[in-house]
Amino acid sequence: MIVPMKKVSILVMDKNKEASLEKIREIGLLHVEKKEVQSDNLSKLIERKTKIEQAKGILSTYAPKKGEKVAALAPVTDLANYIFDLTNKKKSAQDKFFSNAKELNRIEKWGNFDPSAFKYFTDKGLTLVPYELSLKSYNALGDDIKLIVLKKSKTLVYCLSLGGPIENEQQFILPEHSLNGIKKEQEELLQIVADVEKEFVGLYPQLDALNKDIAQVNAEIEFETAKTGMESIDEDSKELNVVWITGFVPTPEIGVLKRQSAENGWALYAEDPAESDAPPTLIKNNAFVRLIQPLFSFLGTIPGYREYDISFSYLIFFCLFFAMIFGDAAYGSIVFIITFIIGLNYKKKTGKVPDAVKLFVLLSLCTMAWGTLNGAWFAIPYDNLPRFLQSLVLPQFNSENSIQPFPWFLEFLYKLTPENLKELNKGDSVYWNVQFLCFTVAIIQLVYARLKNVLKLLPSPVAIAQFGWLVMMIGLYFLVLFMLLKIPLPPFAMYLMVIGVALYFIFAEQKGGNVFANIGKSFANFLTIFLNVVGSFADIISYIRLFAVGLAGTSIAQSFNSMSGIGQGLGDNILSIVLKLLGAILILLFGHGLNMVMNALSVIVHGVRLNLLEYAGNHLGIEWSGYSYKPFAVKQEKN
Image (tube, rainbow, N blue to C red; front, side, top):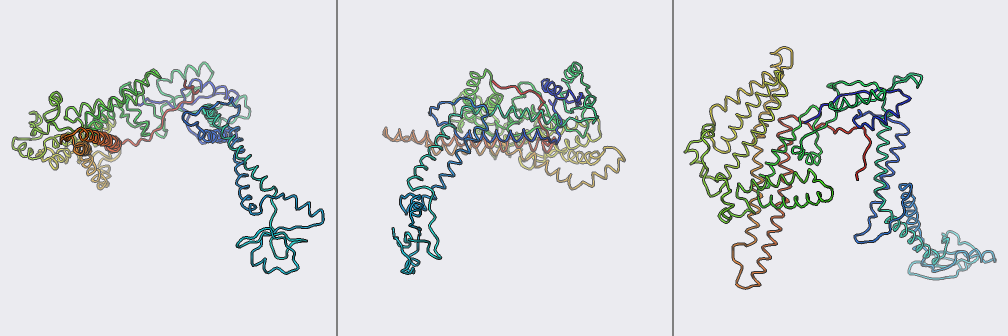
């Protein structure tokens, strides 16, 4: 259930606001109303958080290799800045290394020489100017230019000009260091990079310290945001000025806040949230219903404060959808064993089993129950199942039987005569029964959604419009059965559809004012209403996906069973028997494993969709526009 909220304002003296905020945070009940605020301190804190997160990202890339023994370094006081200093040191060394590499490539053809020698000769009165001349330029030089040729290639001449520069030719720029000197520096730079990386690996165990720093900065940001967002009367004297903070508190906890306000000398004002307010959503359910919460967290769906909490109904229907899509009792058994082992490990380590593990245990049990009633065990034919498992199969889902007679009240409701059943028996009885079940589940879930709307809107006349839509959908259900399953259309079905639509047109806009004018508004939306009727018809039909996806999974499993060759003979010699058995095992493991993965994806795509879109979205009107209740509180470190 969604816990009701009170909107509260806590008034404190300006001179005591920081101490009061600390106390409010210690109480941990107030969800502070979000405001856009700015301050120099807040900017510095955000900058600090960004820096720590970047440092964490850098350090996280230096995880020790598996099995590698690393000596942890002593804790560093300002780890984030230290990581940035190391990063800059490494980057500087790498930049210099790449710069030297270019220089080496430029001078290596000149061989190893000392650049300072050129200055030495100049001081002695002998000017030597180095050049890299093209063959054309070299051949074009006059006899008056004296050169010492050091080396020739196919395209260049490496030489020294005696006495001075050569006109119109570009001199070779001397390096700062010799070739060997640069190579030695390269080795030193590589060593610097290696030492820094080794130090990073040694610092990796301190990654948790960065997480704690981030948590601490987040708390400071939260505190500074709350402090900056406090409104003021703007008195000239800080001694007399009053400031206040506004937020939301769960109604059951308002008594605690009142007592604390009295003890701390605060003024407290509490009221119900106005329509324009958007309170956070706090959901509290019993241990069983809470099992569905991990799925909501995975999907990131939170109902708005004024929307429905559908946790219980979602859990019930999702269990059914999961079972029908997975379909196979053997698959359910495998999921059960895996999750049970995971649960035991969690229990051993932490003393409790996560709700996500409990949810999968429940889903696997439902799958086992559904598969058992259908006789689905690795898609093995019914006749090949052990007698014990055969005895557990419902006759209505036994592919060897014809369509079983309905109970008398259902025969009366659906007008199924022996002649109808005989006609229906021409098809596959199992498929017919499962499709009938899919459509029946659809109408139960969607009518339940409309009934919730009716109860929520009472005593408003608009509730009658929702009741009309409910009635119309029951009529559509019988129309779907007639069109797709050849069940005779009962005469009252058409009356239900007509009466339901009429009620909707009459009461949909009855929110006050002239009755006939409001009816006119409904007729003005005729096209939208018509499309919604078609959409409701399609919503009922869309539940056939439970049958279709389940059938696809069964067909895939049967195909892999056939490919494995089981039951087709193993051969005449031991080698042939061994090879065929190994091949069959590999095919079955791969095939059924792949099928289970595909079924899991189908649950997400189809099982979740039916609950979120058809049920919650189209018929309950949930927009999932909520956000979580997160009180302004001191964050407790997890052990």
